[in-house]
Image 1 (cartoon, rainbow, N blue to C red):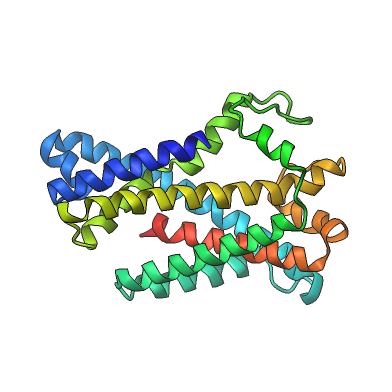
Image 2: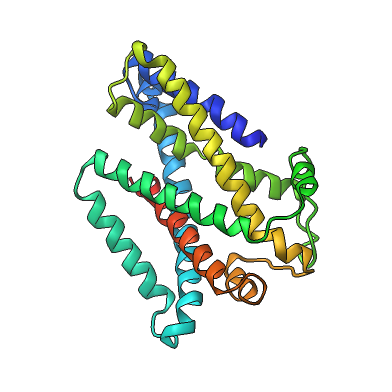
Length: 259
């Protein structure tokens, strides 16, 4: 909840910066602060994004492999799924059309939201548990990872929400829209809608991941474990919806990373 509030503040700030300056965030930093800082941020983002691309692709390919093994006998492995997803992203990006990428991202985000909200609805915990979860706390780390810091878990959750590359992309998209000061109100409303949707979808994902499993006393350490664990608890339909949601989430996050 807190990170989504911070995301709204930063979405709005980066949007207003771009509207008033006419420049993307990195170019504005280069021009008005110092080129060295802009280069440092660019190099840092490159390393950050490279790690993110590999990590997200590994999760996505692993989930698709785990799911497909139930009907293809293990023919499609992680490398094959990663290659298919990479080719799809490459073909879209070489088109060079920002409008096309926007439409694809909107469709993927919509599919992701619908899938995870539907998945969460099948395993909705009591409302009082959800309300308790909205109180900011440092999470407790369950065994066998009890040695890990709850602060590290909290930082990683914030980092996936308030992602620097998303803020840079926000600035680029506002510039591509050619918004002026006449659209400041629209820009602020767009930032609010974006942050709200991030919160709703994130909440649905967390409910999907923990709603019934935690209540059933089942623990897991990796998203790959969700596929076989969901099957007996929520049914095959919930598993399919979950896999579709993870796929939409993975591909949609890869577009801004690669772009």
